[in-house]
Image (cartoon, rainbow, N blue to C red):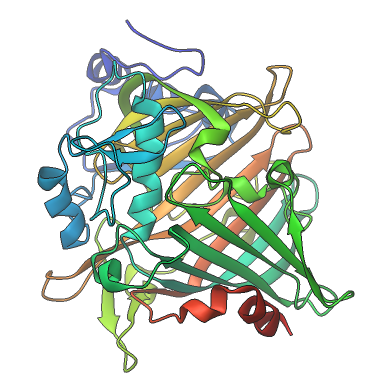
Length: 432
C-alpha cells in the first residue's frame, strides 16, 4: 500500500472503507469518534485525529452532480485545447511549447495533462489552481473573518471586502489591456471594527517569473507602503492566516518562490456547502450572485449548545464531505526567512481547487492545518457555471486557535471591475 508522511493512502482505499464499515452503498452517514476508522486513508492524519477525538463530526455523503463538469465553459474547453500547448521555464514561468515564448493570453487552465512523474508537475498543479480562480472572472465579495479559541470559543469578527481581477484565464479578459503583463491583481479592505477600518493590502501577480508586488495601506499614516515577499508568511491582520494562505489553491505567492513536487495521488474527502450546485442569478449590473439561502442554513459548531469540551467551535457541522480525486503536492519555500517550512497540498485533479493544506514549521514539526468548504454554482438552466471558495479555516494546532474566512454574506463572479482601482492611486483612494 502506497502512503506518504501525512497519511493519505493512494492505493486500496475502497478495500479499507469496505472492511471498516461495509456501508459504502449508503448515500450519507455521520462519522464521529465512534466510527472514525471509516475515514482512514481519506483525510490527512491531523484531520482524522479530530474525528477520533470528537472535535469534528463528518457528514460523509455523495454529491448530486460532478464538480469536474460544473466549471466555466472556457475551462472545460481548455482541457482539450491546451493539452501539451504550454510548458515551464527553469524559473517556472509559462511559455508556449512550440516557440518558447510567453503566451499573449491563456484560455482556461494551462496544464490539463499533468503527469505524476513530471518533474514540473507540482508547479503545474499550482499554476492550474491560480488560473481556476482567474477563470471565474473578477470577484467582488464580502468576507467575515471569524476568530475562535479552544477555550474562548467564538471571539470576534472582522468584516472585509475582497476584490480580484484576472488578466488571464478568464475568456472575456482576452481583450483587456494588460501593459504590465499581470496574471491577476487583488485587494482586501477592512471595513470593521472601527479601529481597523481602512487597513488594506493589494497584490500584483505577474504571468512571468517577475517577483510579486505586495502593498499595504495603514490609515494612521495615510500612505501606501510596499511590503517584502518574505512578509507574505507573517500573520495577516492579527489572524492565524498568512497572506500566502489565500487563493483557490491555498497558496497565493509566486510559483518560483517554492520548490514544488507531486508526491502522490489518490482520493480525499473534500468539503462542500451542499450536495447540489448553488443557484447563481444575474443581477441588474450583469454580475453573477451566489444564492446561498437555497442551500439551507450554515450551521457552525460554536452556535450549538454543546457540553463543555465536547467539540471544537471552528467547524461547519452542516458541510458535506465527499470523495474527490487529488494530486498530493509538496511545497518547500526557497527563502530561509519564510516562516513556514514544508507544506502538503491536496488539490482536486478536475476542479483544480484545494481541499487541505498541512503546514510544518522550519524544523519540520506540524504547525497549522487549512481546509476549504466549496460551493459550485449553476444558473437554473444549467448553462452557466462558476465556483466559490466560500469558507476556509486555518487552525494553529499549537495555540489551539483558528481563523475562518466566511464569504456567504455576498459572493459575486464575473464582476465589471475597473483596472484603475488596482493602480497605486486607485488603491489609495479605495482605502480612504
